[in-house]
Length: 63
Image (tube, rainbow, N blue to C red; front, side, top):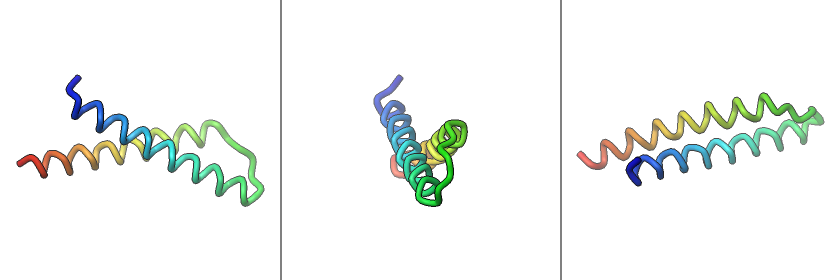
């Protein structure tokens, strides 16, 4: 893979992980149990969204 693709994937996963941690912390502060499935769904979908957003932003910048 190209380094640009690797950086987009890494930034998407990092953003998804941070978002999932924040949402798990919010659930914990509301005295809800930790749910692994919800954590993974938050990580994947938000990470995917941020990765797509970074891809299109980078593509538009390089035009």
